[in-house]
Image (cartoon, rainbow, N blue to C red; front, side, top):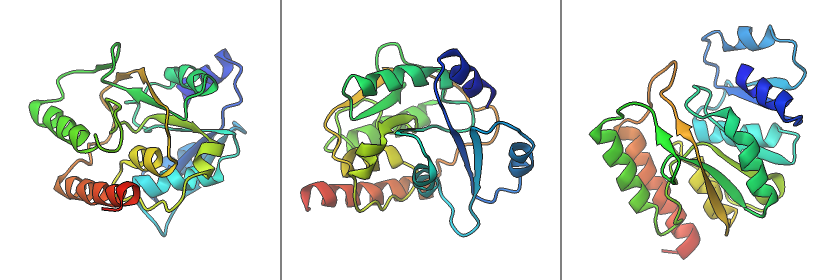
Length: 211
């Protein structure tokens, strides 16, 4: 919140921050409701869970004409938002904060297994998009582009890939970011999520190619 506030003030941008909480009961509600910023909103869901559906709920309730998705664990740098918005103004359909384009970096040693997971997932997504970091959860698109999509049915947590395909994004631009190590929490990349990703890819292949 503090870093986004600095970006908002430094660039004189009317940024609205929505935090979607799946009834975590971890102190998030108390923290957010103690704040006085009018540009900060909390959405608590008690009947549904999951990152992808949380993103879609945030997009539905957002009031701006540009939508930005990012993780709350400080792995994504809010300071990249102005550059992402600029690329949208220059004609991009969707802008991705990318670890794998020149200038992009990843903090620390993520391990061979995690690197291999990312590489395999990227190759499997190649028939859907040619970008280098389709697994990124940090992206921006206009409300008009989002509204043009249909039949959203994401499973797992790769909502960006869902939007690229179902909003029929032709020009997807990547901007380099530094992907930092999370400050709190732990990765949700387990065997179940890997299997859900394969199921998600199957749905997207069928949507695009009919097979």
